[in-house]
Length: 122
Picture (cartoon, helix red, strand yellow):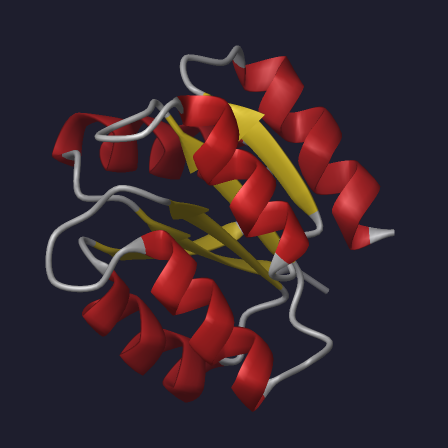
């Protein structure tokens, strides 16, 4: 059975790169450009895993994580971030405290993300 990953990131280059990488590793990938679209796809598709950026327009990743965990407390979420107005570490720490099963600072190597996915999906 193929597992579905919902990937949310406002950076189109990151979104497409990760979509290809995850597809090559055998995952079905659904993508969203912000938290609003991500929540809609989360409700529609019931993905096995969500990978979300934290700094995005419309609805940031922290808000998105809170709403996803409210709807599905067992949702598996990996938060990724390259920073923003606050230091990167603070965003990632906040995401972990609000329910992200794993966090990963950008930039990261494909194998680092693959290891986090395996860890969270067990």
